[in-house]
Image 1 (cartoon, rainbow, N blue to C red):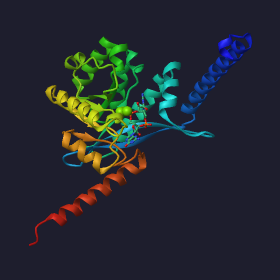
Image 2 (image 1 turned 90 degrees about the vertical axis):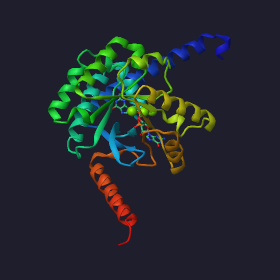
Image 3 (image 1 turned 120 degrees about the vertical axis):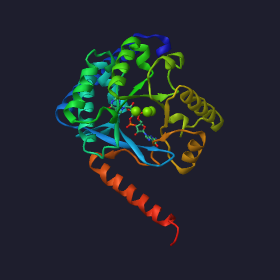
Image 4 (image 1 turned 90 degrees about the horizontal axis):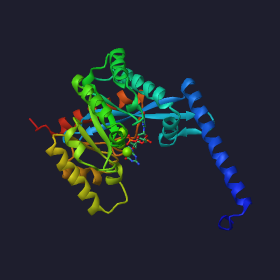
Amino acid sequence: AAKHGSKGSVAVFDAAMDQAQQERREFAEDLRRALAANELWLAFQPVVDIATSRVVYFEALLRWTHPTKGLVPPDRFIAVAETTGLIAEIGKWVLKTATRIAATWPDDIGVAVNLSPVQLGDERLDEMVFGALAKSGLDAHRLELELTEAVFIRHGERARSFIEKMNAVGVRIALDDFGTGFSSLGYLTRLPVHKLKIDRSFVSGQTALKERNAVISAVISMARALSMETTAEGIENEAELAWIRGLGCNQGQGYYFAKPLRAEDVQPFLDRRSRRRARKARISEPLA
Ligand code: C2E
Ligand code: MG
Ligand code: MG
Ligand code: MG
């Protein structure tokens, strides 16, 4: 019908637009309410040192349990939070909550927090980070912030000065979803970034193995040349871990190690792993 350009189809199209807009507005209202109603919570997924298999830190991942819709995935509501400006408030809550919870963990375990490119536009983001550290008592060296390449398109200079301030106090910076961005690699050499997180699509994706190998090897050798670490996201099975280990990646994250955990399950998870470690060490001890 649309190709005839009849008035009827235009009216239907407008109505659909209105409805989509209305739904977005309602969704945003709902999210605002959710924040106040404590429906948002953080899950924590371990990141493991591939050589030693020790947990190095946990990534904080935002969750929304909606009273009627159930669990809403972050990929859906973060975009809405970004377009409505609500991300500032949500981001602040995430930083405060993640640092407060991480301060209760063993002090060799860190926490990573995702920052939206929109948050980098906030001139007081650095103060917000310092405030969260001070209030929680978490050592700055235990905090890692995950940015995406998009921040360098949106806020090039500000992103750089923010990263430098974080570096000055020991907060680490990782580039998330690396390999999916705009890949102007020149900026990497000029930025004091500690780590590249290789996107899941190159680890457990549908892309042919040959291509994934090429991308990951290139990222790892570039990271080495620039003295950066690498973390592979989305390791789902033993074969993927063996392959990633062979390529020389420093750290791994994925369902093979653990799905994102509730805060109360973090310490039991660590205890289980250290018991398993102790058992393994005993077994491999030479018999007296
Ligand atoms: P991300 O930062 O790249 O986080 C990794 C995502 O991969 C998480 O999805 C995690 O649950 C998922 N994942 C980890 N291992 C595996 C695996 O082995 N297999 C599969 N299929 N998936 C795995 P999640 O929690 O749904 O988060 C999606 C994205 O939402 C995040 O991607 C991040 O970009 C954004 N996000 C989450 N929390 C926050 C937050 O607090 N602030 C901001 N700004 N963004 C957030
Ligand atoms: Mg991340
Ligand atoms: Mg990621
Ligand atoms: Mg990702």
